[in-house]
Image 1 (tube, rainbow, N blue to C red):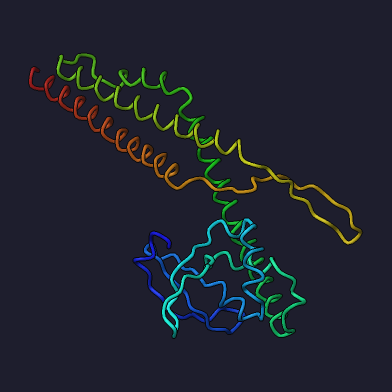
Image 2 (cartoon, rainbow, N blue to C red; image 1 turned 90 degrees about the vertical axis):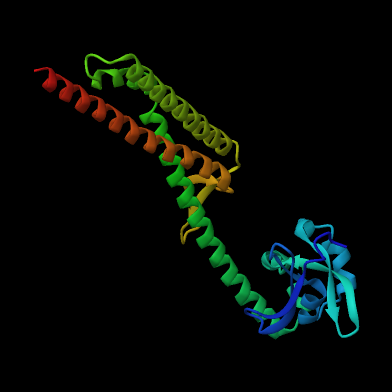
Length: 262
């Protein structure tokens, strides 16, 4: 039994496009799974014949054996993640199902393909936007060390020892944040450079193919990588504000001291 089976909630849902009610099992992390036997019953397929075949496919990678409550009690059954339904619909011969279900399969598949295309485009747009942002950051801070050396030019001509030490601490902190953000940006770009690339083509009415570009097959950047990079940017923004505030305070203090001496 699945180790998460102790925390399972079972309910009924009506599958879109099929107008058919099936049980759905929500495991502890609220992931929805549908019993394969219910899907087979919907299409009139023999579960005992097809499940051994499907278990050899990549489709089964996230399948779970979960306890299904029935009128005869609980029984362990194979369940598929709800998100795997489009893939499952491509794993059998549609000619074996009733014409009504065949039409529903076609409508559902067309809708899923359209949703997939939209999701893929959204992912690609976000991927390109992130890459552009990362490159802009790396270019902007490519000469960071030299720019940090120019910060003392903003300081008053004379500083006491305490102020000088505090300034050096600020510079060290800024250098560390920039180094961390730069390393993270390079890490993300390097990992993306290792992903599979596919060619994008168009096909006109005459059957002529024109290549219009390339893009990564799975343009996904792990959320934790993005969050870490933007966390460094947030720290860097805060550091800039603190540095400006620190220098303005020194200049103001220097000017006030000279006025008092006069």
